[in-house]
Length: 254
Image (cartoon, rainbow, N blue to C red; front, side, top):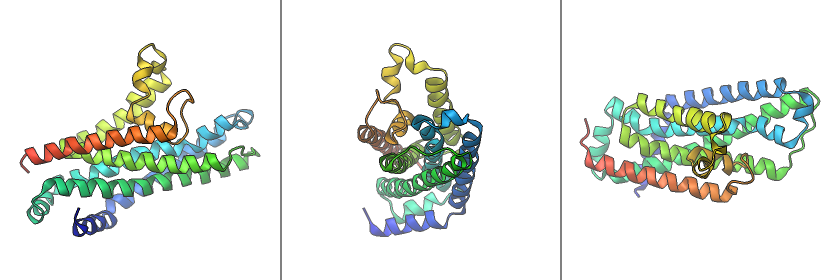
């Protein structure tokens, strides 16, 4: 991997206004959702550790979503604006370009995840304290929430980058990511309880969105341990990057 390419990609990510806008939107959305949960749930219910994790863990879902969007935009933006052409002229080895984007995207995704978890913990803790609720979470809960959210957002950023190399178009990619994380997994498997149906639960426990949840210690104890969930999500990230690598080598740049 070329250090020159890494420095160039870091510069692109740092200087892209879209990333700052994404970060601001993510923090604002997390603050709103966490605060609403903190002030709307009954006080007697909020006294339990499980309910407190639900409130403070809202940042995990949003962090994962924005991490995936960040990764997807890092490469689809270049196809949209045509900057991918000079990039490939300077570095003809397209696989190396994609690898650098996956690595840098994952690192920025980790940063997004940490900020998301920290924002949720800060806002959620303030909302619960405002209602006189004593937090029953310990240091391990907070550490797992921060580390797991960061790992999930980082690996989903890598997944988004790999998928972006395949799809290339921003709109269908972002719509697909949102539908998968917010509807297919969150709504169908959790709210509608499809994972409780025989045979479905075995599939649902290994889906990438569920793995990101397990990595932060927010899922059922009957599923995967956080470490195993991170490894499983890493497999998805490597697979997405490999598929993107094949697609970007086989297809011409429009």
